[in-house]
Length: 157
Image 1 (cartoon, helix red, strand yellow):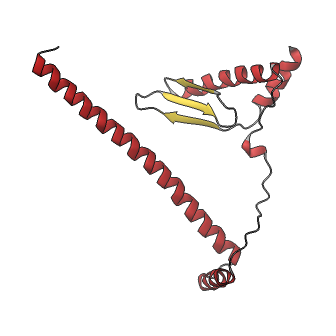
Image 2 (image 1 turned 45 degrees about the vertical axis):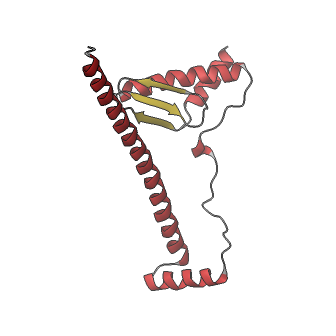
Image 3 (image 1 turned 90 degrees about the vertical axis):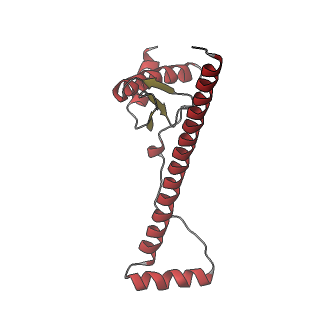
């Protein structure tokens, strides 16, 4: 057991990704991205963070006892910052020309294009999720209004 406790302490010191998600009712859902099924909630953000730390300990205890491989945090995975992309010659030429016209290196230009596109994609996903929540809320309100009308019609309190 002491050996497991030391392992848990080691893992708890690693920078796991904790995702804190506010709910419509004012509570908070929280999960650890790298530990499947490790989730909790709290009435406040602080409580949710405290609860996820406890859930992580339980998750790690269970995984160690069962001999499962424990995923490492995403930040501990090595990324060199380099990758090779093959593009058609005409696109390479256009990219070089545009980078020159903006007074930056080809690398800087491509990084800025990728960053802009990725940011736009992330924002679009967030907007889509918000629109879905708004739509669901509007449907719920319409449904509530219909129920209220039916109750009035039949004089149900």
